[in-house]
Amino acid sequence: MGEVWMKLSKVMLLKLTNASSIHVLVVVIFIVLSAVLMLDLLNLSSKMAHMNKDNDEYSHKHGQTRGIKEWKNIRRSVGTEPLPYLILKDIVNIDTIPVREPTCAVNSILMILVTSAPDHFDRRRAIRNTWAKDRKTHNDSNWQTFFLIGNSRDSVKNRKIEDEFYEYGDILLGDYIDTYRNLTLKVQNGFKWAVENCQPQYLLKTDDDCYVNTRYFPRFLDQFNPNRDGLYAGAMFNDRGVVRDKNSKWYVSPEDYPMSVYPRYASGTGYVLSKDVLQRVVEAFSEVHPFPVEDAYTGVVVHRVGVSMLDTGRFTMYNKQWRICNYLYLLVIHGVTPEQQYLALKYTDDTLVECPGQKESVTWY
Ligand SMILES: *[C@@H]1O[C@H](CO)[C@@H](O)[C@H](O)[C@H]1NC(C)=O
Ligand SMILES: *[C@@H]1O[C@H](CO)[C@@H](O)[C@H](O)[C@H]1NC(C)=O
Image (cartoon, rainbow, N blue to C red):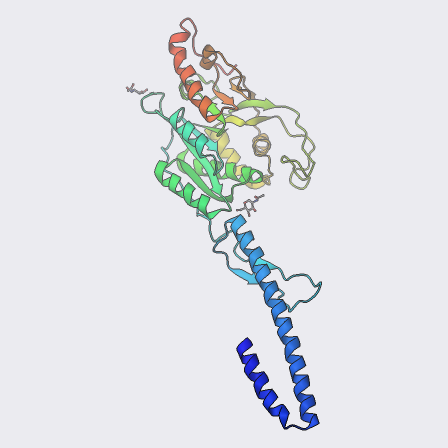
């Protein structure tokens, strides 16, 4: 650019030496106009560089390294005019992983669906090594555990989850974006998959910070549970008001759920549904618009299909210092760290020797 400019100026200078005054005027005007144009171009290119930098930062933050970028409203803006903004056209589709479904045993006694976040590998590892393990050696009939995970907005994380899916075969990877506000979609996705592919006798929905007593629970369901049909059991929430504070993570809009109180429902840390209830709940998903509080939503749908909840002390929201013999009774414990999973399983196994006179509990209470 500079070189061309120098050459042009030399030619002009040569012409200038033997030109008339009108020629001089034309040349001067030409030089001034070119200079203005040059400055303007310089200005714009520095702005473009700036915007590209913003864009790179955005891409980095959101893991969108392959998004198609489209400039909108590019103008040769000078002064205080706002910078043109850009739109990432395919913000969701480009790096996501399509649905991946594991294989499940059909008609098992208990299917355990664990809601888990893409980042929670430590929790999943602890669960795989403790209560989700050994289902063949402990012949408590057949039960199986699967993790529910969605796509994240980070392509690297998505690849990791896909690898984990292939390595362990115990992940149902849904096509929703994995956020707290999308938990209801996650659970709907898991329930539908279970009904369409696996038809377990009972389904337990729990979280990845919970201990499930798989030594006693499947056997209890198989042999002692009196509620073979119409079962919706867990730790009860009664008269819970709907949160209308928009800053809360439990916020639900009046459009999504108009009533001010939820029907009694079971805490999402663990609830179990019998096959018939699961089937009816999945059918009713289309009649109740999903709203973000997953366990309340399930409660509303169960209520709608006319099933009432069974409140059981065997599902606890608190990970207190339970005594070993309490593990003859407790079926789901919330608030368990990965390290504590190992301990909880050990206590459960210890019940066999530590609680000689005591029998495992065979009722819900
Ligand atoms: C497991 O249970 C089934 C049916 O309850 C029984 O037939 C089988 O012998 C058991 N297997 C072991 C290894 O205990
Ligand atoms: C939920 O997932 C959908 C589908 O992937 C996505 O479009 C939406 O942005 C997500 N919502 C939230 C609140 O993350």
